[in-house]
Image (cartoon, rainbow, N blue to C red; front, side):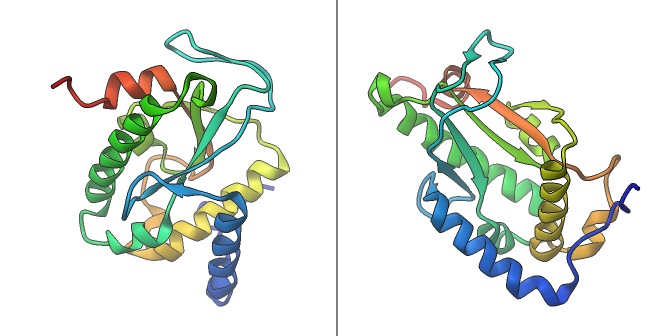
Length: 190
């Protein structure tokens, strides 16, 4: 059975989702890309099948691959009529800060790539991430529901936001190699 596009947690679960989100961020030790950042990074290693990115980077099991996360409270603060444009501009600044941090890391600590899952794939694509389908497992469907619930809770327009767009809001993988991050977001040489 296909769930309706706007299927989200009932409003009475909003306080529960807020606690789950706060605990999850602390458990994952997500570090903001910079002060007042929209994006945060979780240190991680790749556990899946090898992934070949468009620039030729091959991510193999065990490689350091950091996970990008949105800070939904920051997203909410950006909540204006043009929230997506504002979020995109803040995220680009965060990616510039992340590129500087990436370049300063010793080679052994530098992630091969950055990844994540999102229902906001068009914004990720604009920022230079490769967007890929993911297997429709029960975990993916649960993450679909959870992220739609967060979008309904945090985005301007709340639940009405779920009705916009060209396709079903479901999670997709996003990937960017460390080399591509540096190419796109490193500050110009002085």
